[in-house]
Amino acid sequence: DTAVSQTPKYLVTQMGNDKSIKCEQNLGHDTMYWYKQDSKKFLKIMFSYNNKELIINETVPNRFSPKSPDKAHLNLHINSLELGDSAVYFCASSQGGGEKLFFGSGTQLSVL
Amino acid sequence: DQQVKQNSPSLSVQEGRISILNCDYTNSMFDYFLWYKKYPAEGPTFLISISSIKDKNEDGRFTVFLNKSAKHLSLHIVPSQPGDSAVYFCAASATGYFGNEKLTFGTGTRLTIIP
Image (cartoon, rainbow over all chains, first blue to last red; front, side):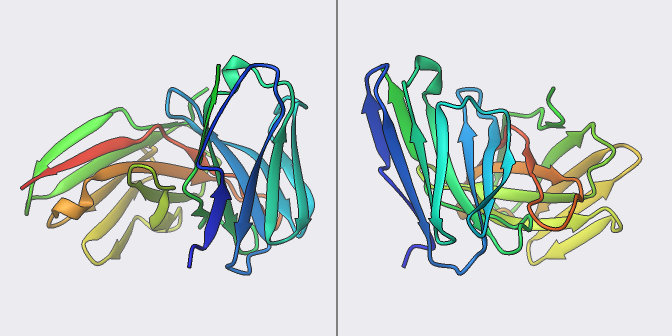
């Protein structure tokens, strides 16, 4: 039973399209995150939500919009995709916003 | 500005020997440090952590050492096993208001254990 699951695993799309990545955790955690790993392998936080409330927004373009319908789900919607958005996106969760994160297996986004 | 640095992109170690992975940081506000392990096509998994009030933390074959004055930490794996072959990420955080601590990651070191 996967603790943090995200779909799809691979996403190939054209520039200008809009796409979504879904994430669900069954750990009962109250905090969820989106991280981006770019081509240089930097793993950087994008957003964090605590009990459906946005807590961290790391100067991410407003083309990226996270949505948390409940504390077990955090989806990421990306409008007007650009070449530079190509990366691996990881969803994660933790209890009480602690540092011990549980990560999903990642979504490889390729923008052509 | 890269606040957490792992200067060795890769490391190869003979099975049974000690693996030492290094990490340097620049932000003196960091007070909690973690190591994550990542296999291909999987997300990082938590391995071990250390608070800045300690200089050593041990968990089975894994030991993390913290040298605050040098702003340096290291992960020791003894003895190294083939299943340890993975990318290891160092991460750090600074205590903020309650909850939602933000982790800053290094770029990882790929460890290969040679049978």
